[in-house]
Image (tube, rainbow, N blue to C red):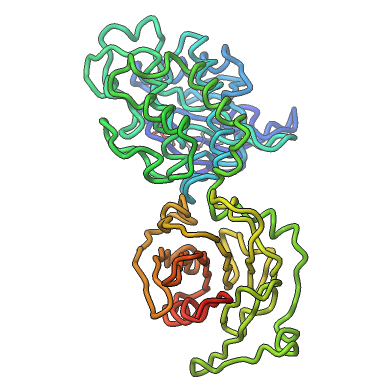
Length: 459
Ligand SMILES: Nc1ncnc2c1ncn2[C@@H]1O[C@H](COP(=O)(O)OP(=O)(O)OP(=O)(O)O)[C@@H](O)[C@H]1O
């Protein structure tokens, strides 16, 4: 595709993407000195009158609705070859599809996005329009002075509420489209968009697009920590019978807002992000050399790899880790509440090459976190960790040794490998929770670390 130099007074900067009917370019409005996105109807559709009319209608709706929550249209014109183009707000931060491609979102972020998407859909409904294609790739993101703003976009399938109750051609995207939308000739109303909002919510919190209705796997089964009210809202929005869905996008949005305001929400943030603030606040920086000076002698348990034993501040827990990982230690304990478990401050330690980057999703350091959960507990690993640290597949297995039994779940392509494990001694009076990150997956090292974890009082 050759890049045009200008569209009218807008100087083309680069290609942003192409959809089924149009191509979108980043351009610059030199007169107002601002970036814009220019959407041009594809050549092969230019003389198809219904497609052209839909394109113009999209521009008119967005212009008339003129909302903070929708992409704004500033101008509409026609090129010399008769292709119409519209000039829109440039969404400089991609789309919600880019965010969810990395896995389920932290709950507070998912709820913020859903509130804003719900507001955008509400604006459209008030304007008399059903969007019919709400999905993560049609929700764009723009940076704003207060963070990030959601812009509902792509009204290519939008339909006027007045005309929607009669014969309606099937339109939408499988996975996000209500059952009545997929039926040719089925009449639809604004509750079709409520279904799509439910589908987007399902994907934001579980990382998975919902299966075709009827939905049998509830979000809570995929991510046990989410609030029951959110699970219920998503399931009711995805009801096959639209009478069972929230009445409109306003009700949906109000419910999301109420869930977001709930005082105990913080405990429902995904487990792998929960104790990040604690680490960030913690003082760090005990180097391995100091540990060795303090008398924790390395053990050459592997050829070419020496291990060193590192205790927590109470001396109750210790872990045996590759010496190369033991550059920084945060040993002052943790709160199991961060994982939605009971109990106040408990012994816990993080040993890693870089404490501050421990939760870095793109380039995490190697290391191990070990934290104690006191009292008899039969919580399974998947009840403690309520989401995936990345989108790659994971394997779960039972583990046991002479001293322990437990389970682990492992992601080998996260980037790097990520292992979470719970270990219970045979007397069952406590549980040791472990997270192990490795640049390259080496199962024998993980086994050795698990085998070497100690709690005072345990054999
Ligand atoms: N205002 C905008 N700012 C930045 N990028 C945009 C904007 N509008 C669209 N895009 C990007 O341009 C690409 C094409 O968008 P378009 O709406 O034409 O099609 P689509 O939504 O990708 O596909 P389809 O229309 O087939 O569902 C997408 O990657 C979209 O994210």
